Amino acid sequence: MTTIADTWGLHEGHFWLRGRHPDQPVSFDAATGMWNVFGHPEALRVLGDPKTFSSDTARVLPSMEMSSEGMLTQMDPPAHGKLRKLVSHAFTPKVVADLEPRIAELTHELLDEVADPDRLELVTDLAYPLPVIVIAELLGVPGSDRHLFKQWVDRMFENTQQFSLVNQSDEQERSFTVAMEQFRHLADYIGEHADDRRRHPRADLLTKLVEAEVDGERLTQAEVVNFANILLVAGHITTTMLLGNTVLCLDAHPEQFARTREDRSTIPAVIEESLRFFSPFAALGRVTNVDVELGGQHVPADQLLMVWIAAANRDPREFADPDVFDPSRVPNPHLGFGRGIHFCIGAPLARLEGRVALDILLDRFPHLRTDPDEPPRFIPSPTMTGVRRLPLLTSGS
Ligand code: HEM
Image (tube, rainbow, N blue to C red; front, side):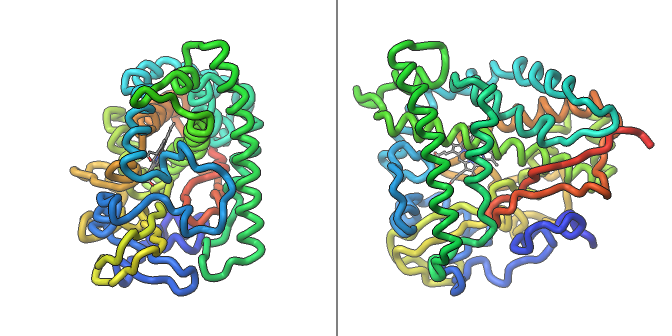
């Protein structure tokens, strides 16, 4: 069977996309000095036990001079819970649900600007700008500055190599330095806006963050900046990948595509299956706090684990026919948004953006298909699966 990965030449490391399954659910990789967790139950166990499996991976990684204060993804209990509660107050389901009309309006505006009646470049024309403008407006920074964030965020994810604790090559060090520089640009940018909101509060998320209190204490500048940065970076790459991947999955499965066009109520299930089948975040990092038995292996303390949620999402012990794209699977306990205390805070927003944008896209383009002469281009990172460019033909012939 030719898979999407074979058709378009995706990263060789993404073996699960080619219908291959790992020999063992957990294994040590001597080349990188890290443990790989590929199995679904094993991934669930790791993500569900932050006491044993810490998210503070910085302690085993090469030195990072950036402050990790407020980096929610890197924090463990109890500090994580406090900050998460606080930011959840600012990022409520109602705040997200209220965005629906604006998401629809922006989708139409962006599609109105497409000049060529016969083609669309999904990423540039819609999937990139839409989530960035939405999160920028929510935070309260000008969406028109998006070319600045794009420059920084693109450079952050330029690394094509699998990270290794064993071979700390010049290339690896260089990509760390470049990524840190980009993060600093973003931090300076957000920092200036946060300072402004302290002096001139507005009705935006940044103001809510600078005014938010946990146990009578306000967030520090570093906490505000780092959290806002995570939102801005997450707002960039994730929904972009989700939309692109969903269109790619539908393109490769014409029957499902036709069904989705006919019955739009199936869109949420299509999006969930796309998150399972083509998971944007392929891997999450964790560190063992203590020695532990996992998937039949003895993993010592202080080891870096790569939890390959994208591979776990194809574990035949959890999903029947895991290599079949089947939006009708119920339940669909994919790990595309993670699990446990770090479960994606932006999931409701990503799902809403995905649903609204796909629905409008199908309304406005009765024909949408990939262009064999202009194949999609993918983000080169081994831990992410998503398009960087997705040229689509929109004419019927
Ligand atoms: C956490 C995936 C969209 C904000 C996560 C995690 C995953 C994930 C897998 C768990 C990380 C871990 O356990 O280490 C995705 C995917 C998205 C998406 C696949 C889109 C399809 C978004 C959006 C935002 C966002 C749109 C915000 C605007 C966050 C934040 C966390 C997070 C703040 C950290 C939560 C915590 O550590 O408690 N996301 N995400 N995500 N996501 Fe998303």
